[in-house]
Amino acid sequence: QSRRDDMESLGYVLMYFNRGSLPWQGLKAATKRQKYERISEKKMSTPIEELCKGFPAEFTTYLSYCRSLRFDDKPDYSYLRQLFRNLFHRQGFTYDYIFDWNMLKFSGQRFDTNSANEGSTNKLDTNGFSGTQQQSAQQMYT
Image (cartoon, rainbow, N blue to C red; front, top):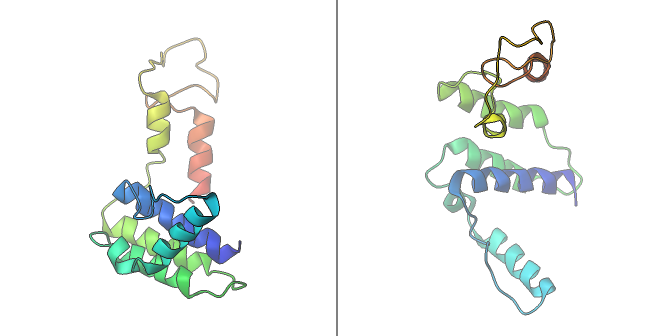
């Protein structure tokens, strides 16, 4: 396992989020070893362009870059991050520091914003986020 492998795996996770599945999911084999061999073969035989078909070119660029690295190469993390930052802005998104997983976490819960905790920095705002959570998210992306 190398940094290259980790970054390629991250690319597959991103494609899984986009597609809902990956071509090597559900492959059957007699043994675990054979299954992992089949998965590996399917990964390597699936053209990146086919895997990323219908999605922005940045996904193809990302996975192609990862596959071009040698085992001990250090990925250019800034370059890879910038690929998706540029796509994010080109698609018209803005950082609101509200993430899907937080929306799910707090959905269905009601918060009284006029409660006795008014002075607390951890008080939940109308979006269901504490001041500390919002501040932490903002620091992460600035």
